[in-house]
Image 1 (tube, rainbow, N blue to C red):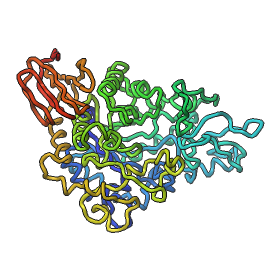
Image 2 (tube, rainbow, N blue to C red):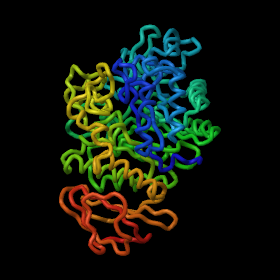
Image 3 (cartoon, rainbow, N blue to C red):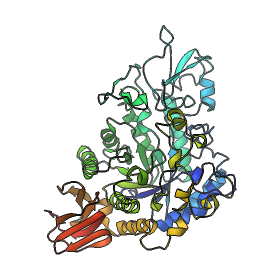
Image 4 (cartoon, helix red, strand yellow):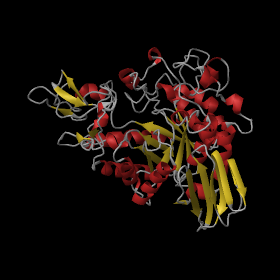
Length: 536
């Protein structure tokens, strides 16, 4: 159906770390094909592949040098076609990353652009003159540290890079750039992909006047680790001009049946509002997500407020919620201390798979995988290398998927590009598959339960007013309601729900006596309930 994405569950695969088929220590497309049965068995609807395009790999593929080819490290276009065919055989949609805001400095167009100020690609990237004293055009900062401007000796101008110096930003004010990028997307749509995950979707346009950013109004007395967080980036990203390009992208996808886009909105001040704006109606993004649920905050009020605020702003919009991905500390580690490790992981799975919207799961999440503690000399991630030891970068969540307890966890016969350490090795697929109550089997049971309950896929939410740390809401569709309760603490909590239909589906530490539901530490439960259910 054309809106298969609404309420879908996407499994994120980080190709470098999923499965290595040739022993070079780096995951590849053939390896993914070997392991796709795991994703289908788990019960996901789609896979999302992080970048697999040619790249110098200075930002692990998010610095693209060719948008319509496959990096030899991952295989060939024939391998990609085989992966696509196998995924479709298994009933899985395939979503691929599109990094449109910037390219690699190794891209032929940037090499041409920097040669002179009057060549055919001169205006394809963001160039600006220095100020009279030689300093950058304004105060914009890079997400990865330092100025967002780099002096280029050939053009004797600065170019904009919101991330690494080797990731120059495209100039979206140039219509030719927009047309070309849409053609790159069309290439993959013609190839048969089912959609795109749009990296840094709110970074496409910059302020044409290059006005300096103001201080972040939330600045406190203690500076953050990264000075980037000290600015309100209203001029360097999240510009209103972005909307027109989203309309063009949606028009392109509407020409292909059953395709979808999910955009990553990175804006700490306006994330939810932008996410709502970008998905409002039927002519923009299908879905979007922010980092709102990827933080260390673990309270009932926080999760409730994120969901309610989004739908209050965009009742016709659609979110995609996630607790972990390739950019943040794994949630099993972020939320440690809120209960027993496995109990919190089960609770998190039950919550995420009950929230209104679509869901993204990150590889290894279904194992309760934890963040890998790495030494400085083991790091590869630029932010980790720059901000160590206060921030350790993203390598800790990118270590290889663990399939068994053998050498390198069954990921490779060689030396893995990032180490597989004992705490991660202990959480492997083979040791959990078929074991009742294991995290892997819990995820599978919750995914099966979600599929059996239409209200969990498309139903609207109504929250109960409950004290911390209890979260409760109903999901209602076509007059059928399911009540969902969660205890985010370690002390027992109770609620009275008249007229319920009894416990159904997976549960943890839940006791029902008459109308009284009691949840123990990190407990959760589901109950059919009247559409106008109330609790006390």
